[in-house]
Length: 199
Image (cartoon, rainbow, N blue to C red):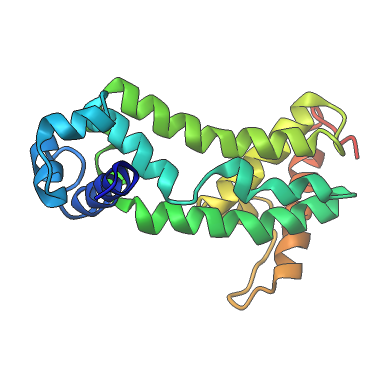
């Protein structure tokens, strides 16, 4: 096996073992054994050991937020931005929820470095949405409010719609979701006179 192939195989086996045994239940030796190499050989490729491997596994899953949400830059209006977010963000989150579900189960048990890496990856999604929102929403606090609404809705917090009496039905079309998100953003500010919408 070439060095490149060995490194890729280590990452692949680490992902499989993390998924099967979870991160905490997987040792460097198990990953090395599954790859057919020694633990010192694994450390040759990943001097940071399991922590560096976790980062390599997450990066290998095609869940780079900048890449996944790159098309948001093409939006010409807030409505179009919502449309693009609702199109691309679920795909990214699906990778997160299926391919690294094991990570959610033990986030509170991970060492600080690993926890920070995962949090930074997730928070970068919010930051990308915020940057693009600022193009159409001039006030920083309004843009931040909009980005959090989008972020929470796509994390499964659909109850936000109920709070503002926005009724959704089970067979919601993409267009209806886009309109509901915009309505939620506007209505949540209209109900709070301290933060009037600036659209």
